[in-house]
Image (cartoon, rainbow, N blue to C red; front, top):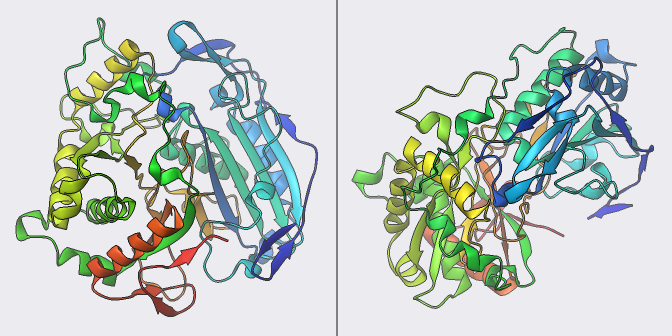
Length: 468
């Protein structure tokens, strides 16, 4: 059963099955790149897509059957996804393309899409029922690389939930795969964008040599041995914070003229980093880091771009570094300058240096203590995936607290409903209850007034929504 306010429903699942490629595929081993094979990427990333069924032409057509068949056909092209990861010497992961298949679950829920309300955004009620964790399937090595559950709703709509082994792909690569499934479901014989492996383009050099500063891996050897849990993980609660055009314009008033060229992502992320650090009440000399994704393909100026159809991980996580005292006592422009500077330093040489570091340090995990990770999934394209019933009402992360270390990641999630202008985002934050109150107060002070609550159509002091 699921419960959120007055919303209650049950989900009935059939026995999980493996879907192999619909035709024979190469039996081979494929190496991941060093950018794929980072310790911080060894986790399962869940996404969810909600669909209406309002097209009379689709009446009586079973979405589960259509999507199941399309997956098998698409795996002929994306056959590494049907394989299994094996761990070799030096913790190096390799894909065994054995065509075992991806894990698929058919389900039915006695709830309608309308019952989720006008706004669909994480957290979702009964998420574990919409994406059931099949026992024994959650491992990084020797487990299915994709878990897909399609759940019919009583209104005729349906939900597609997907769990991705992150070392195989980033969210853009997953979006490319799901787009291909949609195209095949709609009648195409092959994807419009053919998948390209070419992971060797992001491999380490021979011999490897670290030529750049990587603050995200400072003292990385100690991270695995001291067992110290960051303060932000002490009994965390989840609340979502909303940023629309009004809030973003208010934040820009804190930015001097020479930094006005900053992006919305840079501005909001710098604000979140500062407010979160204030809320944690750290010692002034404690080091804090902001890790944010930079697409290595778009940043490169010294090599050809990655080929169209590349679906591997193409992001690095450079870190902005400060002491807690400097971040809290300085204006927002201090944090913003750090963000913009680190992003500009994420060059092709930085990526090469990172790949070499992965080999030398044997796929380390980024530093956890004092870190805050903020990906941007607003341009992932998941909302555009069409299986024949139109674009998704919502397509994005199934939950906000993902990664190998719970509680230190937030993300920019696209937000839309009938009352909100385009370009709005929601950012989930995880903190202890006292720290969350301090965060909300600090953010409200920076905005200069209460933030619009798009859920209740009222105003609150920075706080938009909290998880139950």
